[in-house]
Image 1 (cartoon, rainbow, N blue to C red):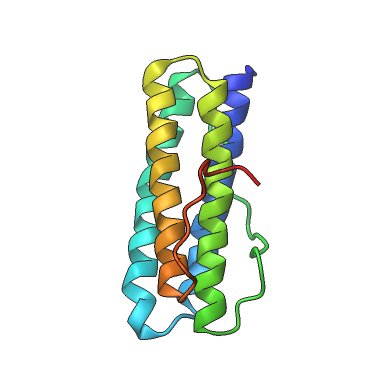
Image 2: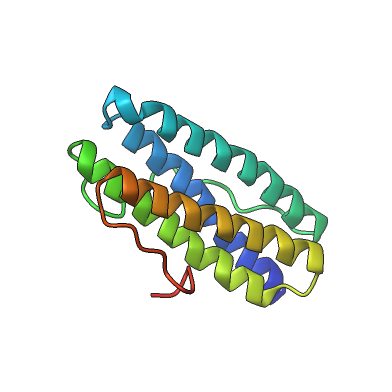
Length: 143
């Protein structure tokens, strides 16, 4: 398996984990935030399908979802759920940033950068919703 496909498979594994985690977060957040969680979950489900198509297009079988995952932090209430959602998006930024530097094909790199941009924006929105002062990292996906 090429480094390109390996990076994309790692991102796909991250997408699977993110979808699972949004399900857990959706079970915890208040009704006020449930629509935003559902929209994020739906967006990642669409992204998963697109990414699986990219991996298949490179001649590989997409990595399968696991039965369960670990949340990035305990989720016990609305605020912790919002922080967990931001952490999920930060983790996806790291995946997309790595992929964008690994793949050679411009359309796939563009796909990764678009996904990185979306995840970075979502992380900022989740933090803003949680009441965290607005800050945007200069290079999303870096620790």
